[in-house]
Length: 438
Ligand SMILES: *[C@@H]1O[C@H](CO)[C@@H](O)[C@H](O)[C@H]1NC(C)=O
Ligand SMILES: *[C@@H]1O[C@H](CO)[C@@H](O)[C@H](O)[C@H]1NC(C)=O
Ligand SMILES: *[C@@H]1O[C@H](CO)[C@@H](O)[C@H](O)[C@H]1NC(C)=O
Ligand SMILES: [Zn+2]
Image 1 (cartoon, rainbow, N blue to C red):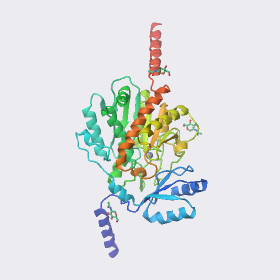
Image 2: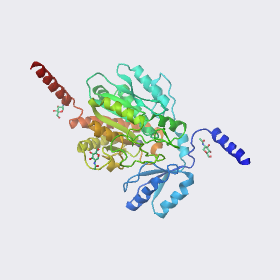
Image 3: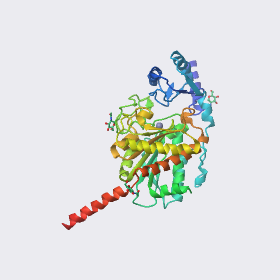
Image 4: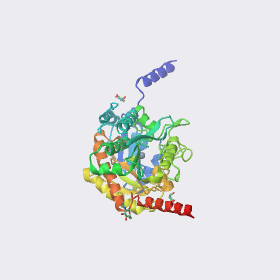
């Protein structure tokens, strides 16, 4: 009887205290493994459940950055393991809830595009309502596009920016991992610049290409990070008693081969098969439908300050690897000019870790998009996915610089050059004419 009353009281308290998960005394650790032994020890811990030990980065490279969140209950055990193995770790956040409490969530005022500012994060509803307003206010150039659907029935909404037909195109995808809030903000900033900037090079970039831009490719996950669990990564499809598939392990390219889990409780759970998830599947078919003009594909993630090129299954320099690395390094040089932020450029497997089933690998392998890059935005383990809002603007400015530089450097190596496709159509036309004549 008393047990029952206590249970009821506990439940009442639970519901009364709100739905949001409380990260009080969850800590963020920053570790740089110095040798193979340390790496192996850390790696062996990735199968501890995500609730106690949540790796922002998979430990696979000596001298590579590993950010990991520990629960208050597990912290002592974790400290003991680190101590026993003489692994040096820095605690960059003692209490994650305190950082979350300070996070600035802006309020967007409908029909006032300037009320979206670059010193705050915005909810799913606010981002979509801003996209509507940007399109409505610039209907000659900006149109709303729909890249697919989410499990809970939300649209994957984006914008197409086009100053006329017959242009090559650039595709931008953000927010596939829900907790990486800086990705959504950066992609919104890029839209804003392409539509409203007075800078001549930015205006030229907007005019010269068709831009397909989706800031929020994991809508359900993003909503969940605002309403319930700030550090949610996957989509929200129920799988038995667990939830969520890692939408950046679900694409049909070397599916389940590397850094992917078959365990639904894992943060890198790849699903029951390639494209099992509606978000990845519908977005892929949208990308495919506009792929014929596509010259560049950019995917935005956090964190680590990396620019990566396919593939994630091997460090072999495949396809136009040397061109993409050269263009990427130059662009990261341009990125660093404004605020001095260092980025490392490399193949996915060498820069971060082997990971397959990702959007960029699929785009490169199946659609052969010449310049395909994946950004890991700021920072380098200080805040990880909890990047303070006062870094949104500097982060986004430097990224915009680098996007323009990718175009500039790409052109210098003969990319973004429509003469190739024009040539093809001229010879095709000639062929048809000759065929008709004879
Ligand atoms: C989280 O829990 C702590 C400690 O129990 C409490 O002081 C704090 O007010 C809670 N925060 C929120 C946002 O619920
Ligand atoms: C890696 O994946 C690419 C694309 O599927 C493939 O062409 C290549 O052969 C693979 N390399 C290795 C070493 O598995
Ligand atoms: C396209 O590339 C070719 C070969 O690299 C070059 O000769 C030509 O000038 C380029 N055209 C434009 C418009 O950039
Ligand atoms: Zn990510």
